[in-house]
Image 1 (spheres, helix red, strand yellow):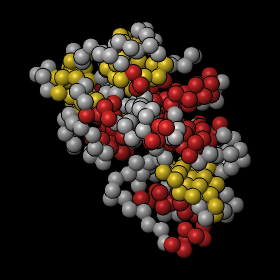
Image 2 (cartoon, rainbow, N blue to C red):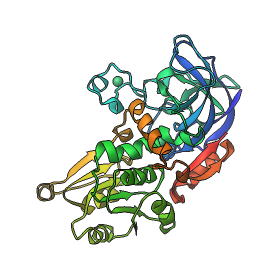
Image 3 (spheres, rainbow, N blue to C red):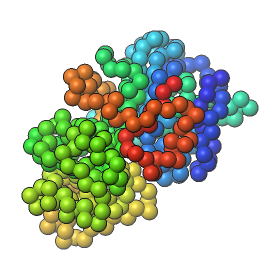
Image 4 (cartoon, protein in one colour):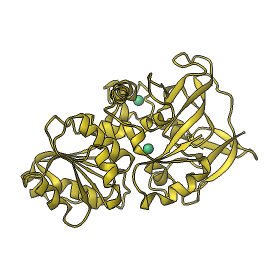
Length: 359
Ligand SMILES: [Zn+2]
Ligand SMILES: [Zn+2]
């Protein structure tokens, strides 16, 4: 038995219980978790904004050490450090074949499978494939990425979701070029990664926007050159900071209609607005036809940073080793597995950054 945070039903609090994992069968890997980040998507899963088969072990941003491998697994061996990838690509679907692996139509095919059982035999599913809020997990081999050299295993957990997403939003989706101005809406884990990515891209003005004035220090440490506390005048404030034009690139990491609309309004004529935040169906964003023409902006959705984790991880690792990307600076709190339910409920009023479960 290992301890895990389990979501039984939408709206229920997470419970920390003992679970029984199977031995890894062919093509599967057993991992002892070193750390797991508490992501906003965990909250979206528990409140029903995003749906997965339940009951499930939540947690999808993790890193750990391989305990054992099933038949046919050759890319990792017991004792290896690994990063979990919650959206593994099948390699066969149309998206995978054309190289857009982040849109793999089969990425969550494993989410409805049997992952583990409770002490009384109840079936549990792997929340977003990996079930990282647990002392140990068993996952498909393609959910396992070897940890690049020189990266601390604990902080590496963040690579699996927040960092790939925020970095990818800036580098792959918005394709920020040196000298461009960037605004990042929402200073959570993804937002902090996006700010650091904008700094790496040598953006000129980097504006961080958040409802909380308390995240300014965190945002500036991640590369923000300006900080705007969100209000009714945010778009105007950002235009003022950018010669009246608006930013070349706005990255929305919140997933709310009002923030998406503000990000759009803060973008210069001809600029790019990238939406990374995941909102619900109730968040309706409206545009009138004339403004779509007049402003000539590009509005893009962005899934998992439009990242190919196998290709991006070594690039990110090089930035981390060279001191250009600071993983530890994104961690605002180190907590235990028992603290996960309270960390989730505290998230809407959070102080920004990541709470990291350290096992
Ligand atoms: Zn996540
Ligand atoms: Zn695929």
